[in-house]
Length: 421
Image (cartoon, rainbow, N blue to C red; front, side):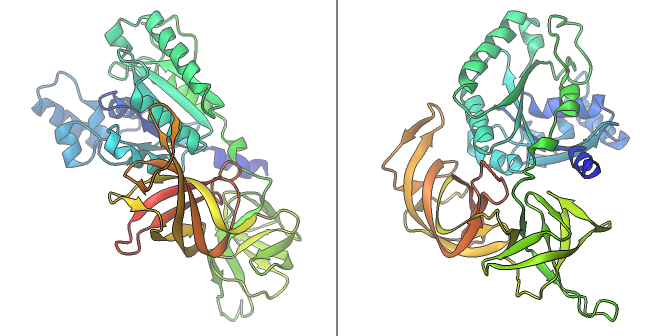
């Protein structure tokens, strides 16, 4: 168990967010550069572009602003994924846009993140986008939050400016479900407190950004109590050596499975015992979320994609009606009685929007009731009716079985991301 848990905690997925021009791309570029995560040809390309712009030093933001439109405008307009590693941990970064109209992109980048890194301009303090991004992080139940107070060089590395923003943020964070957060004063442009400690801010005694990223504990974020294995496919080799083999493959959404465990298959309710567990590295005695596995049962049960294997005495909720918070991602508004395809774990069905309980005013965090439609970037509590029952847990309890997406059947575009209440 220790070996598996350690391997999963060696990778940290985090997203970045902040207002336009707060310096997200520069910060990630600085992090990659100072952590030796940049290839020589990438750096040469950045230097050439910087020289053409007449800059005195390389513009490290170009390491993440990969699209041509982004490079020309100096902004991020799509979720840009970057990868780097240190001797202690591997990292997957989702750099999300700062514009209000691209808020939905943050939902995309944050949906699989263990940590959210939010930038605040030291000159401006907490602004509307800070509130918006922190609320989304809270709504998506991201366990860890780092707030980087950037551009401290432009306020003379003033400790009072930092302490004022810290105080304002703590007052605001008290209204949200944020348990673990850190505030770090930095200058992404000059590298202060990004990878190396700042000589200009010796009054700050906390860790640098990289140190905090390397040491945040994510192993305990995985739900190991509620065993949930959504079946993705049925494996039938039909070979001489495995003529009668029938395996059920999928990714453990949560929990632990061991050989000889008694399990129930939903929706049939039939029970059996785990006979074998196979991983990409070979057979094992036990498996832990979020491993991808194939299991074999003692009994020949009719199981197909979309079914779920759970423990006998620990089962999810089964229902056709769900209450959820959704972020509307579509450009076209949606109204009550609109119909969609819904994907929940490995199960596909159809759904209808029965009711909009309220929308959330992101600026005041107040509920706005009596709403009849959903516009792009709206956050709302809704009721959905599904054509077939789904097996789910609340999103607070399980981020995999508690989430879903809605798909427009005409365009096949994903139009909403939902968190079941």
